[in-house]
Image (cartoon, rainbow, N blue to C red; front, side, top):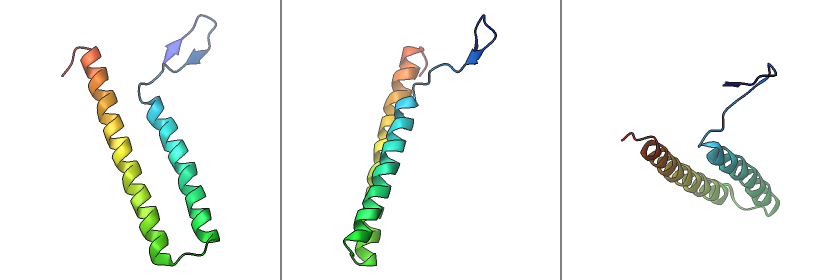
Length: 80
């Protein structure tokens, strides 16, 4: 937390803010995918497979991006 002179405060920028944005986008896309799958009336098994695959891909994306950002942050701060 950073305290300014005019007695208000703000939160310092986090290097993980881009991941928060990605999660919001992925959540919206997942909801849209669910709605589209319901509209085109696919079977429940196919719907579960599509959404499960989508969830696994999002998990992999977030994991890799988080590791890269934390690695760069620690390297920048001189930590290993």
